[in-house]
Image (cartoon, rainbow, N blue to C red; front, side):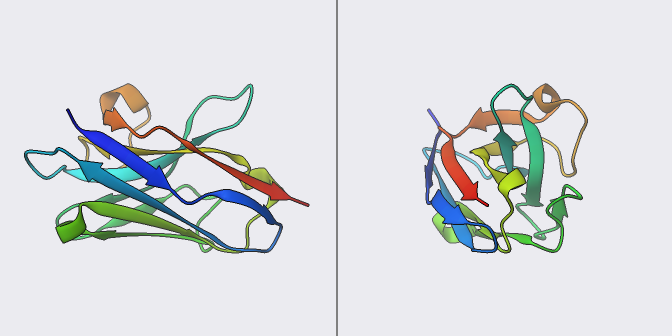
Length: 125
């Protein structure tokens, strides 16, 4: 019954910024962590960033570290992804997720509990 509603996204030019939002609705308890993943056509879905619900420890895939910032608002059951200095390679559908783990894991099925609907981020060069 948990729904992850994503907003934000869109079409921007390289070097621009974008902010994604993900609100978790219908949760009966707080998740261990929440995070962002992305998928481009013909590629596997990959980890982008995650944050622990208690403590706010954040993790990033190397390709976005220093450019993206994940944050959260526990009272609003919402996480955010501030994306700065966007590159064409960042173009993908971005998915929000609730997670079991407190740190990144190699297999998505080992950690993902719920997926958001996905939102398109397109960065033109």
